[in-house]
Image 1 (spheres, rainbow, N blue to C red):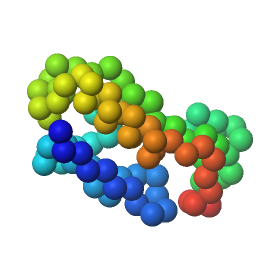
Image 2 (cartoon, one colour; image 1 turned 180 degrees about the vertical axis):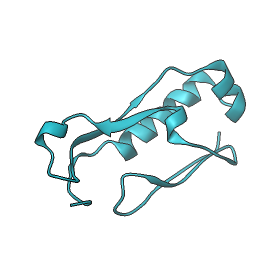
Image 3 (tube, rainbow, N blue to C red; image 1 turned 30 degrees about the horizontal axis):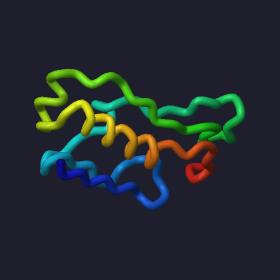
Length: 90
């Protein structure tokens, strides 16, 4: 599997996400959201985290990946899109 994940320098988003040469969207693999909005500054995040969802047969076929490769991709997304508290947008 060929995986490319690049994160914008100061945004909580990906500038490039490709799997086996196909452009991908992290939303297909899980959700990224603030888990602690009550303790976030206005326009900031209290605890931003990415949480994976279960792999579907359609998604595995779309990118030509196995369940183990799906898990590796989700590990990378969790690492790159989970960063806790942030005030870049403040």
